[in-house]
Length: 367
Image 1 (tube, helix red, strand yellow):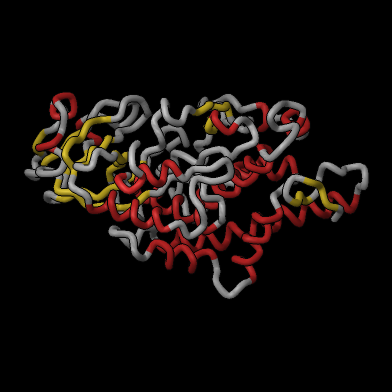
Image 2 (spheres, helix red, strand yellow; image 1 turned 90 degrees about the vertical axis):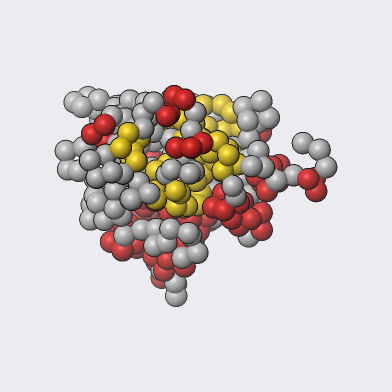
């Protein structure tokens, strides 16, 4: 990439990725990168290939890129009751909020995301490639709209429109290129069936975790604990759409899974989907640092909802979340801790159940 002084903030961020986390705690380059994505001049826009819903690649004047997810509806609109998790709308604000939550939980495995409001004419339409341009039209309300091409909701009846000429969205920093930072894709052991009627194996077998524990890389090292962290993050956000995950190949198997694609979180603030916690409920293990963080937010001076409000307050599209979603975070922290207590009671009532114990940095601890 040349002289380090000539690197963009995105390139500095990408160079700083380590075996254990995407960025260091309080790393100043993160805020600089967020500011760049929210303010730098855009020179080109085109649709990202693949995926079930529309996402746009944003090219900046300094050659950096970001992934743009447009706002579809107001913060307070909830997931429709008859929508399956795999057909639900993606929410731009869920991407922003989950980045902040991932950071507050101490994981630092989600790429930086910021909100930004665009002029749909000058910052999308006039910069779009030919394929995206073909999907633009003017609505009966005289708003400029587009729908792109994708599996779900890419048609005239689900178009994304300016209001009247502004469009809010999330901007996520790009991972290193596949050439610079090749990644390995893993099938999540607690993947849902993605079928209207069929259930997954883990939903039908109470001892499913014992099968997972015998399979690499979950039979040694950190990976099983990392999946517990991921289930905690997903339960707090209500994200049921976790089918695969990725790791950086250069670090081998003893490294963290990336926390990607959170657009289907924060859809149902009044419902807590306990099946998302299945990894923790079935394996009864949790990383000690994660447990300590949850306890601090549950019993300390600052609740998780307060920390989230404070963290997201500086985002350009704040308030990022509808208030009931913040209330739900505190309620769900309590439910995770209740599940941990249930695991401890199982351990003390049956000494033969040694795998069902609280984990301290990869080793079991007696209750």
